Image 1 (cartoon, rainbow, N blue to C red):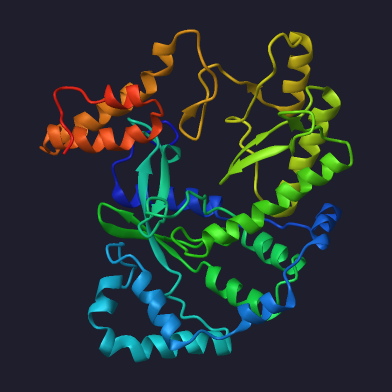
Image 2 (cartoon, one colour):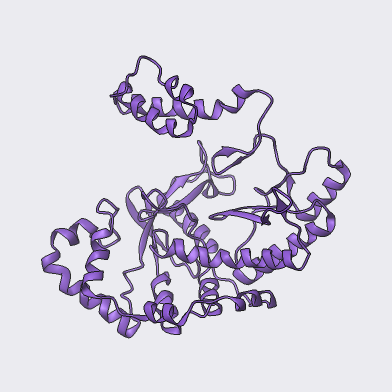
Length: 387
């Protein structure tokens, strides 16, 4: 649906998605702000820079290729990792030459960073372009051993951060070439229906993205700590002599801790605005909420929420898949666990898997969260006996 009208023409639908995502991945002019001086106090050593500038050996290149997942979706060229491993004796010389050429001449074939994306619905019954999110076939979110990290960090922000952290110029040029986005093909009904030409962001599936994302958001972390040292932002302490906590981060999810005052709310807001103006990233205020301690004055809470432009946090709010608050009824708190178990059981039935075998695997998984021996022994049900 577009502008209230249903559309069935595949070409028109593809054009709507291409227009939507081209506007999303557009570069905006950013400026380095004085607050970034907090990065001047840190930096890597000369020895680390020399190590980063070293050319990889043939053995290291081969180890890198063999460490790649063989079942990963192939790129636009149709060649998966398993192809290179199967025919390594034939293609290894070309791979060595390509990698060596890149490190010597700072040139990377344009097709290397090209990728195809598919559309995943955000809700059960999607009806418009905003109800879908683009996912690259080479994304790394579900790869074993990888952390979940959003690949939306700004390229210029990363390069600037690396310069402020005293990374060598040669290494920065290598990284810049590796993360340049050329094109993304939009897959609809199994065919490439159009091309998106992004001017910012990181390619989903880029092996450098987790480390580069940490470099980018580390700026926000240092900015918050600097505000805390200046006395503009308070911190949270578990004990009087314990460590201070100003924020907790996981990928692009962040929890900020501070004193519930109008003055401190303005300090937090200014801090976020400085970071967003410099990086090009933006706070999703529609999904951001505020929590106050029990008994806090309602009028003062309203003033703080109006300043921040955020709503009050609900009692059933979730963070990283877990409930933040306990309710008065323990059974209600465990509904989330029960729902997850039932979803697993339904998936086994649809795939005609053995429910008995599935329960054994599920029990092994959830037992890791049960500390009590009594709870462990009582967790098996329906007559399932572990081997």
